[in-house]
Length: 130
View 1 (cartoon, helix red, strand yellow):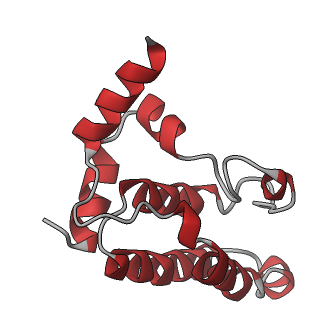
View 2 (cartoon, rainbow, N blue to C red):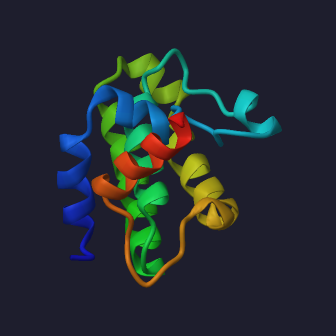
């Protein structure tokens, strides 16, 4: 099934080790941008990690677009729960981070006619540990 909901439901089933394998908080997992993209003390780590899962899972490009929109909405939800001062000072984060993944995230998204699943992740993790 290639609906965004199937990605979200499967993410909830991942173990902490599986999440750590595919997700790293905000910013790319490798390269120089990883140290440049802040998550402001971890407040944005949960939406960033979910977004990493969607990108790792891949599939049709429509899922990337939907995942990017969900990412922006999730960042805004985080902001809505902050104090007024933090909300004001970090109000730019959802728009800027969305723009970054929208325009620069293409190479990180696993494009394929099918999506990778938790079973694929477990297989990849086993092969990586050999």
